[in-house]
Length: 449
Ligand code: PLP
Image (cartoon, rainbow, N blue to C red):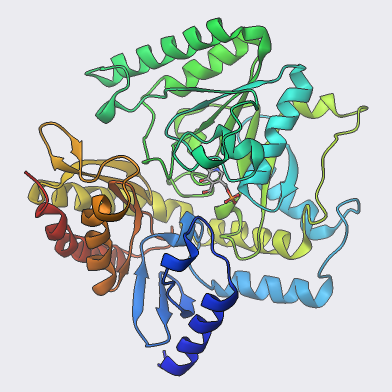
């Protein structure tokens, strides 16, 4: 890492002059200029290195710049950079085969998109056409993307400014014992009440009007809430009872993040449609998609599917997916995520919780963990109010700054920090990150009652 502050300043100046950033008040942001990255780290132009405990937007499951994936993209670029979706191409066929081999049950047909939101859009479209119904049920405390239907399905404040409230979306509560919408005291109660609430919602909406229920298998940005045993199987049963398409969104939880290829594998549940993106190729080239059951695929055997994208199954994206999936298998990266979660991250985070009064709950699995930060453990009052900004958000801003100052890049959302390193993270790196979190959490402790 050779420091070059002048180059960094030029990158920053051009960014501020011309780049319009996502989700931001353009005049209030100060993006870090990044010079490079490798494995679990990235660095700036001053030569400061950050341990990436965010995996960017929880997508670099294989780490930064994995040489096998970089080489595959280079080789594909030399061979065939682009070709329209209507042709059959070796890397697209192989990527689809490798994905279908890993998806649960009979989800054996793959429709490729450029990312997660488009995958959700197409899953919803398929469900509506397959059932001839229009409504879609989704959970509060969810994120499904920022395009039209996906943002309406989203159950967090990112939806509010774009909510058309007319897209046939109905929200319900999914289980989350620590902040139980059902005032439950045990996982069993939470599960039972959540399923009853979902079935009541369906009854009052009219089952014959509902095309699909979409859920993140393990909700990600909303807080990494691992579902109680029986919940997903219960939703599967309800969908079967009413002829509703069950969509699992594995955009964030899929491809190793939870320590299995797909989070659904933990509960042996097979949806009718499954969306993926992010970890499928660690975002080296934009890619997402929908894995489709035999029954829904058959709907479009003789009837054209009315959807497509210029870059569906883009060769560079598919080549990087093939290399990513093969490398993850060869290097036992999914197993590494499971093991590091079980042996290092889980126990390490629980130990932090014992010493830091600001940690209300530790939850997660694999390389997918959240610390729910609180002002008061007894009342579980969040460290910052829901959707806080400005001065109200100060305690979380201080915590994030303390991490960054010590060389850790955290993933912070509302009153939570998520511990979501690459699935390739080593024990030493995980411990380095835990040690920094230990120090940074003292800033959060100072705000407890
Ligand atoms: N679904 C889930 C569960 C996500 O976490 C995300 C992104 O964070 C999306 C969908 C949207 O994906 P993209 O940003 O690639 O459109």
